[in-house]
Length: 179
Image (tube, rainbow, N blue to C red; front, side, top):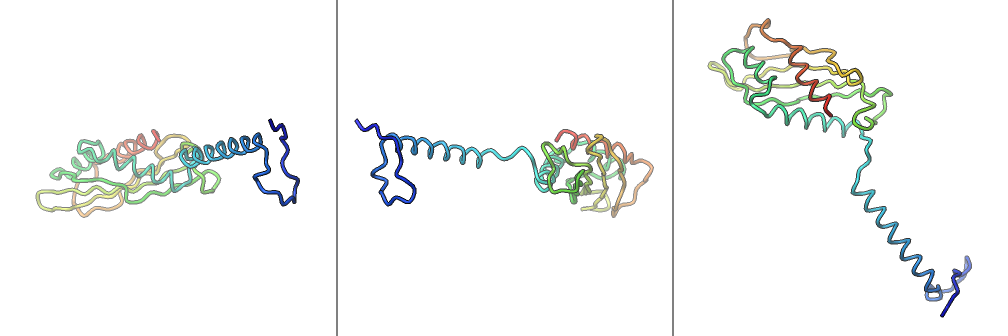
């Protein structure tokens, strides 16, 4: 039985066939562990997100929520226009500000100070089809509150006083708060 556990000296021209069976076994185990760690690193992403990753998750989450025909935002737009049916609603712009100005959103958006989204609702009415209404929601991510909710643009005529833009803002803010 060979009990030699030493490796060839540095600079030696000895081939790997002269490495003892003990060291060969150790090298195989080490290589296996290194490969397993590499696979785990590739499979499981870091818990800290970039701003782009966080923006994509905000857009995806809000858009999925707005797909519901009975979503409160879509219903508020329908009641504002009186004779329309909201066909779709989606985020058309999303800006993210971080606390430190970096490109790191942190874990679960912990470094995000503000989320600014523009939502466009497409609707059909009795007189007009493919109408739209756009509004902006600015959400304070650190204090979990809506900073601003305002109408931006529409190609419809309606009574502005029937729209409670803060309620619309809170509906969107509640989605962001869950991220």
